Length: 141
Image 1: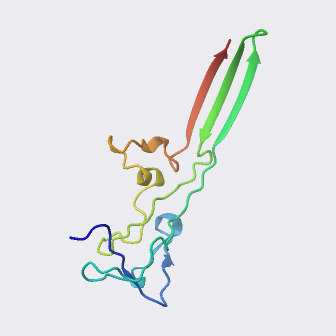
Image 2 (image 1 turned 30 degrees about the vertical axis):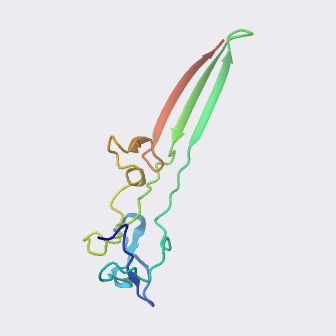
């Protein structure tokens, strides 16, 4: 029984990524660049040498404080997460035997947290999720 995952052999002279306009992020892993190894032997593909699609997100906050008296103030705050609503995709499927090998099948917020109650991560609040707005009102006295 193998512990962990077995890395494939990297075939030289083949591009690792190939353009794919219909795939999330516009590219996917080239299945011709990898060869599945037999048994529990590790292949020639190095650890952490292939990077995923990356992440781009702009968060923004705006606040205004209104003085009601010398000791009392009311603060209004607007926060926007992923302001431009930029899509962020999770890492591509890495199992060579999978029919979806090389393509990203989830958004980054789903990829980071499984969304299950035991993961402790709420996908709607993770980096890479859809645009979210939040309003706050705070009374200081």
